[in-house]
Length: 388
Image 1 (spheres, rainbow, N blue to C red):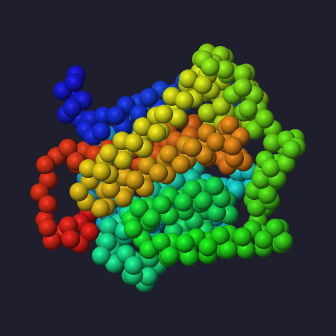
Image 2 (image 1 turned 120 degrees about the vertical axis):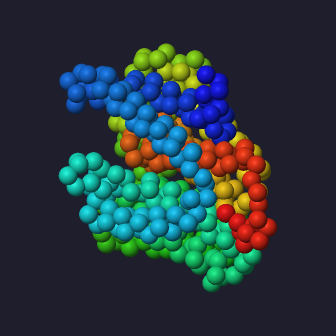
Image 3 (image 1 turned 60 degrees about the vertical axis):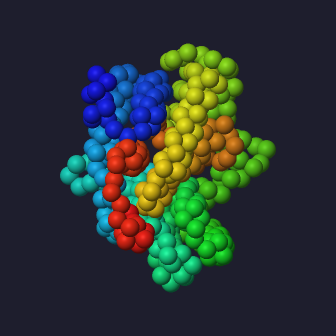
């Protein structure tokens, strides 16, 4: 059995363990938190959503397995193509996408009845692109026209297309790319200038939207921030129920399947699944899940430290930062540290598109770590060009 895993499941074993443990947590939490949903839409068949999540996780593990067998070198030349596909998809989604809660985030595939959240694909494509450009421009990092603008313009376009329907995802992606450029040694003056311009543009966008009432989603952002900062919580029902779930969970929790707040929280299987985990498994369960993401960050740090090429190091760090930031945002919302954002917990929350692209990110990480376990011959001339 051990030889079987060594032969077919390559790469960092600790990351594989993190994937398996998060998948188990996902199955337990989704099964427990979808009871009311099952009675409302599936005639009380509580196994329906468990089987559905099991199928999604199975598909996700298959994606991880297949992607981790592909050499990371494939993703560098593929990155521009993926970005060119992502931008039109985001534009189509913004203009004609399926609207849920006044936000056009999903694009329906004609004839299949399947909806895809195109921002998940765009996040992966953009991080790949930024890592590629930084690796190719290591000798021209201070060049505004040759390096900075070709990186910043796609970031601006992608985040601008995501922002009207999903501000938190746009902000998360922008922050990830900013840190990736900082790690990639982009001129700090250029980065600070870009940050100032971004804040100005976002402020202007929100001001115009509020004055003209042209984008209803902006009013939702405003209400959430006001509800969070004010003493009144009448409109912040989900945050209240989440805090009750956490407070009643105690140290060891109520036990699997014994959550009561799952019947009161609007989205206990996605946005607030961390609160359900703490309610049922206590602080022990909450800290364990948090540690799994921190372990992922630590193991990626080791991969980056061992990396002898620029592209895989930046790609691994970019993907991990995005996953860990998203996890931290989900947890922070659950404990009411920040306003409600709607970010799922990676590889844990119920969902299709997010889980599949999260799995692809894990697969790429394992592909990079797998390559480090092999003895590779390096061409000095290729490495001098940023070698990816």
